Length: 118
Length: 107
Image 1 (cartoon, each protein chain N blue to C red):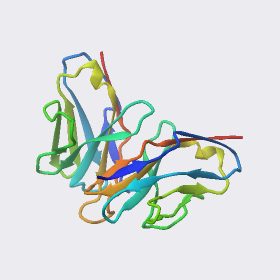
Image 2 (image 1 turned 180 degrees about the vertical axis):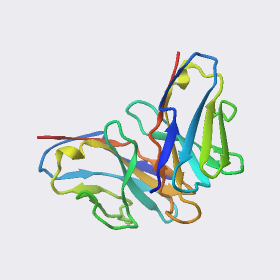
Image 3 (image 1 turned 45 degrees about the vertical axis):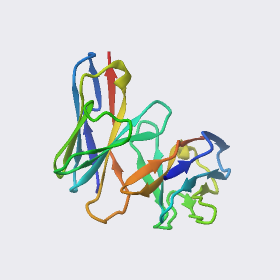
Image 4 (image 1 turned 30 degrees about the vertical axis):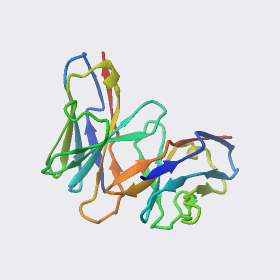
């Protein structure tokens, strides 16, 4: 149980274009999802917390107009990298937690999306 | 502010030797600590959480509030334990990850 999927697994785009990444909870409803960024050989950096039906909460230093997050349903959150540039190239990982107090702070992670901006 | 420190970037051990990964944390409230593992080309997955107080794949971790530590231990390392290990602190609705420790187990 508690499986999270991401699509696509890899994407290559041209500089200036926008890219959308989907994160789905497959067998549970996730009122809260998270988006992370991971640079090579580095830890996960939380970008934002995505709450179903409300605006995402962005971490300090993360441009909300650059990284648009939409959590329109209990099983889907999307991250759109707008006007992507080479410095946005990275590994983007989403996660989800069980609703309410179930599971505490435990999060279930997607497999990640490798974004390369040319 | 919550902070997680993993002082070792890389731990290289021989198969059958004990391994200990250090994790120290800073948090003003009651912490919820986790160890996550990331095997090569796989997603991050939960290894242990301090609330469960269980042993998974031979690993154990004890929360020491006095020393603010949550070190991960295994008495006899196996080659399949080679992976990246992250200590994480749950608080204020989110997880704070340490920098991670790469464990390499050589035969």
